[in-house]
Image 1: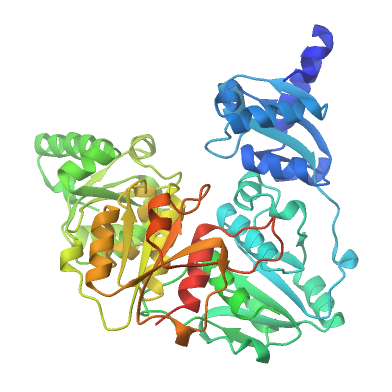
Image 2: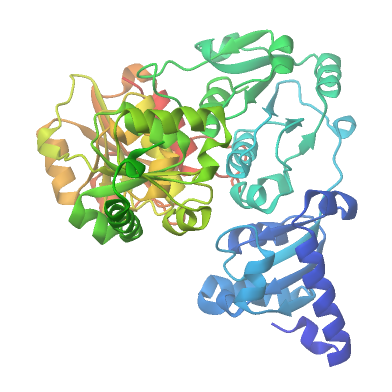
Length: 269
Length: 269
């Protein structure tokens, strides 16, 4: 685990301060958007990041990382790749980290440029629309689920938490390093879906059970709504159908990530 | 929001100290088991708790609770029900709470007595087996999912986090106030499933896709394994079949709660 150590101590102090300041700054959404950088925390997210094409800017590690063989391997990989690595105390790392247990490693990387315009859909396509999802863990799970079940993208409508929030990145387990998670207005989403002949359905507890797979449209987008309030009025005005799952009783409900997973699987292309 | 205020100040001070001390103590699993008490945090979990038959022991609330109409309604309900209520500062509540945002309310309640012996299965039954699940959020989601999809119980094998951990209770959104979540050894689980003619299947990424619903056994238990390591050796030696979901690519994976949700829905009775 060298990196900063190979520089002169003067230089290394400057890198040190800059990386720490930068990492602290990137806790704010506005700073992430201005700098096009984000933070990934924890061994698994960082492993996935290093395996992705995303450009890595620098790493902060604490002694905690080298307490497991997997952590040691990750530290060696960071050194082999010549990534600027700064050793900090547990306290300094905890100050930077958004998640409760960053497992001794935090990486700063470039947010990939992705837009609706660059999205190419296969003939049979599925898209997930996260409509006002506010819990970072839920959004991360949704993105991970959409990627694993073969969706072409996850569109994020206004009111949804930033997908490059460190807690979202962690819960997504690296899924959106490859899978496009794109922030859109409803007008942009509507125009895109119409132009690409994608039907928009909404998930709602009061909706009909999903039809047989064979009865699903070739191209389908599924909108799932906010944890407490369900789909937004804007979403409701645009969907052509509401689908829901039959539950054991009216008082029960499913976590939004689980509900989306079941519906996307039932309606897979 | 009266409660402690209606007592003499001497009495109220004693209740105060006792409830705070008790709540702090209940952060430890051993204390919960010895006292048969647990803590529910946050508006929704407490609402669900008050709607359940579980016996409530006392409540701690902070000024934060009354910042929303829903919180005010909950405070009024606590007062109407004559539940011992103690007003504390945000700092005191944060010291007691396990979750990041207790939303100004923490309730101490009795853990219901539940055992395999008291479990009565319908002719067509589903059971979820949580095999070494360590993340409280994941276990809570699993219990919530099992309840919503009509499972008769969730069995927790050794190595699984305590279902009465406050983070599990919060993620389960009140599901196991009614749904039995029962800790068992593998020998107990094996004997019970055999005695009740329940087949045991395991979820595994390398398993075959789930069969048609009509081909599923009348009584089926599905075991899902630890987030990092999958099913335990003990589980693998006992399952008669491994089922898994076809994913977009080998590198993708699903959150254990989402995978369990899809499989339980596909195989529902």
